[in-house]
Length: 255
Image (tube, rainbow, N blue to C red; front, side):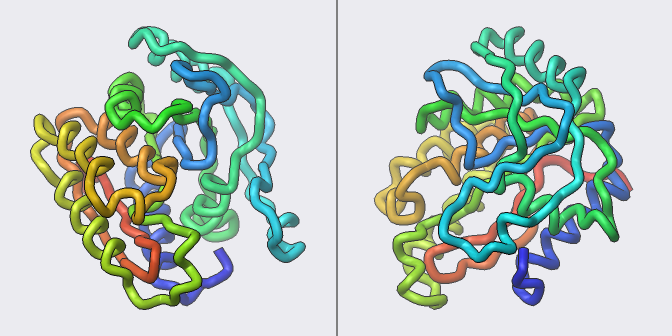
């Protein structure tokens, strides 16, 4: 967010412009690595209309806790999400809360309020309180039909995310490179084989190095499930130290 010279910054801005200028959704539904439901077997959906922020991080400079990102929710859109989940026999609980930093910190770059504002409702839904990739893939399948109603589904995580090894420097670690490539291959596989190949990622020998916890990996399973028969494509990546900043898109954007 502050490192404007980092390559991921400009790439995220490109994605934001593509969504705002070409996709032009009537609403956005977002799943973040930083919200797991409180109860197993169900999903929580934010029905709040007011666009508050959650500063769910600790030990950072004061300015981090003073950041703002203008946004609004929509109980109506949230109810569309809830209905889609219930139709798929997924337990759901409406809640009122703000956007966590897994959403607002990246959206502030992608949808700069001054240069590329996102003037549509943002509704966040949780992940499951599990590390089951098939469960999260089915979560994506449940909300897939919202795409046909001009609702953009965005998932926020990281291709590789190991905070413990950040002290080892910026040189790409072996597991960062290997897992980053494996994720690309799985996402870009034929849609009828994609769920299994993406689930297999969690069983790889390098999986727990790349993701000590799978919360930052599971959002891409939601996105892949929501894609239906649309093919996935890695738009860009940067494997750096113990992190990968890969960005993906499912389906094509109309010219």
